[in-house]
Image 1: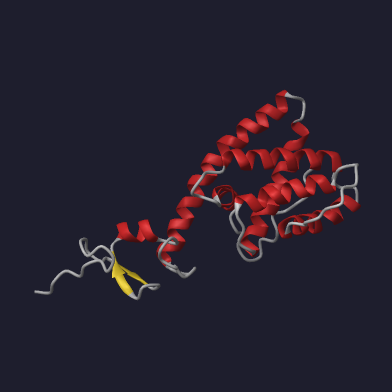
Image 2: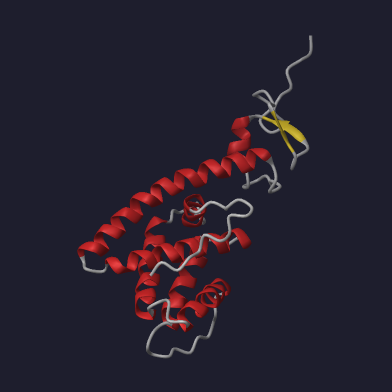
Length: 199
């Protein structure tokens, strides 16, 4: 009778899943505890992919509640016109997150940078956040065509930055970004871009 394979990390529980990063079998508990912390998981690890999918879905549910409160507050304050702009920014940030990894702090800095660029007062920037530059490049054609109201977009940037800061959590530097990715999942082939001009 074969002896049960033990987890290569804790040596206590059964090693029931193969870890490609360690080239060894580990238990699900150690996988969860050490994933992307002390283990450099390859992005295609099926356990990482599934765990990230579940995390994004949970965070998206949390964000939906925060988004609902923000939308209701804006509507009560007579600023309901900002909601489509918030959705546009959220979708665009999710799209950019799929193209390159960034954290919540970078998203907040980018939104605040875009708000400054949309200000009627010209501000000389000493530092241009890379994500802010991408946001501005993506939205500039819409602004140039008059499809977006710069003042409304500026307000939406500031509102979304505040939401992102409040939503964030210590120890999870990409909680807001994960929530956006769960809210706006990648579209299948042939579905085209989800980013449309609503305002």
